[in-house]
Amino acid sequence: MEDRVLDTLIIGGGPAGLTAALYAGRAGLRAVLVEKAAPGGQIATTDLVDNYPGFPDGILGPELSERMEKQARRFGTEIVFDEVTGLVREDGAWTVRAMGGEWRSRTVILATGAHERKLGVPGEDEFRGRGVSYCAICDGAFFKGRHVAVVGGGDSALTEGMYLTRICERVTIIHRRDELRAAKEIQERAFQNPKIDWLWSTQVTAIEGDQGVRRLRLRSTKDGTESTLDVDGVFIYVGMVPQTEFLRGVVALNEAGYVLTDADLRTSAEAVWAAGDVRAGSLAQVATAVGEGTIAALEAESYLAKLDAGKKPAWDVDIQGPVAGAVAAAGAGRIATPAGSAEARP
Ligand SMILES: Cc1cc2nc3c(=O)[nH]c(=O)nc-3n(C[C@H](O)[C@H](O)[C@H](O)COP(=O)(O)OP(=O)(O)OC[C@H]3O[C@@H](n4cnc5c(N)ncnc54)[C@H](O)[C@@H]3O)c2cc1C
Image (cartoon, rainbow, N blue to C red; front, top):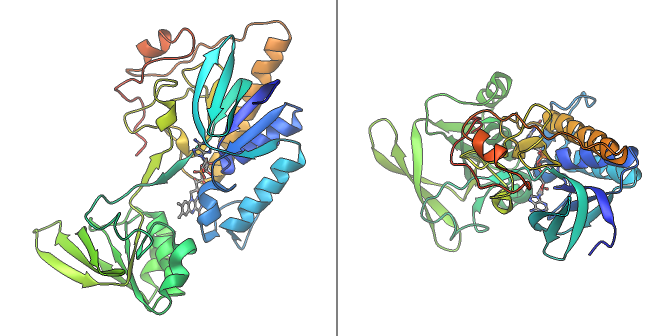
């Protein structure tokens, strides 16, 4: 247990949290960042980040993660490896509980991002780690010279599919629609890749095998026709789920579980901001996560400056939609999770 009250506690060490840590440290705030896995978040397991400014030839995700962590540490923010399990507002500050202890902090920045959504089909859990993967950069090497499937039609599915063609003999991309969601430029590169086959309007209904994955059961989303595809592995990229279970009842979330904020990234709970992929309306990019981490840290700094000057900062959060009533009733910063949603982030 931290024996002094921190200025800010940042939950999550992806691009949003590490940037908030950098700004908090530079502003001279007593700050701690708590990360439950590895610094870098989703980019720690991403191959090439091609669209982050300043790297004209792109940069590997693990290298960008390492650089962000190093820069955040340079300005004095302490990075602790632990998993936050809850937070409660008591006596004008937040008590943040983690598996290994707890802290008291005057402000909190939520930067817990999102993790991969499961397909939810038979065999998915059984073969996880034995042919079912959600991370090409982590597991691709196990499939050298093999045939793998990638499920999904967004940027991640295509980018990671292209990465896998460098290792695997063949990559079949399976998409349940007949057009992709991925950015046009990424689509064009994928269409030109001779090692990629496409299965359109097709759903995976089961993953089967013995010691490892051997085949996928498929169904046409157009006419219901059933078929099978022999593969040695399957990489699943069908969307993301926000990491907010521990925030239920603490801040207002939308129906999909993303944190609702106002334009200054304030949540419904006093002195708590949200930044990056965890936020409803986020664009789920490294560049936007970094920008939001910056805003959250600067807003927290300005809130603390007012407090230290003896002024009571206003917390008149304007979140549109069905949460408004719940927010108004939030008194001590703890409210019931609303059923409705103001944002339509997938
Ligand atoms: C395969 C793939 C490829 C991508 N490629 C690109 C790309 O090329 N360009 C681009 O701009 N974006 C890309 N993205 C998206 C980009 O990685 C995300 O937008 C970005 O990482 C979001 O940053 P974040 O800090 O908000 O969240 P995250 O990166 O999700 O980080 C959140 C962190 O919080 C931690 N955490 C969660 N819960 C807790 C808890 N309770 N206690 C402590 N720690 C916790 C997690 O362990 C994680 O490290 C890609 C994503 C994926 C999955």
